[in-house]
Length: 305
Picture (cartoon, one colour):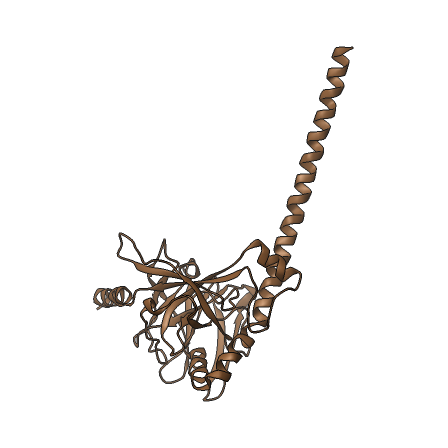
């Protein structure tokens, strides 16, 4: 009798364990679905807030607003791919058009790159240069669209930052500004490509700095800090510029993040005023020390002479 009871009890415990495992799996799958839906919804909410986030700046400081919009034509497009894509575009005083198509349906990754010298050195994010085949697309000093292979000069391991070079003279390079000017509350603007490109310019967005990390140094000589901000970023903005209101380049867009509560707020449509993102979101940019960056440029120029 005791043996029979023990046997039945063992079977019951096995059944309970199996049921618990099944519930855990359902919860996990359901949770992943909710997480994915929240991420998708969150990024759509952020896209909707890009233009409104800039509207306040353009109303209050129209001269600065116009100057910031020039960043659109200066920001390069970096294509990471296995097969070559075709690019076309035009730039006038009032309008910029861009279109990218991939041959044989072989799509690649789109990101941004920021010119910092007149002889073709660009900053981007390290996670944007993982493939061997890189193409840099940008307008040159004569306002012509060029499509050239890019060479990786340096790629960070700790810092999500990379320096690439293409044989071109870019249109009006950015000035690498001193990141120490940034403090919590400083107004900033970002640019990037964020998604598919077809007859469109990269939309800008404005926000404020949330916090700035301490400066970091590695054995290789890299010097940088990280800047958290609330300007609405999306996938495809990686490698694009974080700018001060006078057009100084202080950082390179790295990633966007959501706290769990932020994703739920977006999923439920609780996103706050149109000119602001929602609680629980933050963007991250890597801010390089200008002297260190230009030192890398000079060292590379000496190597290839």
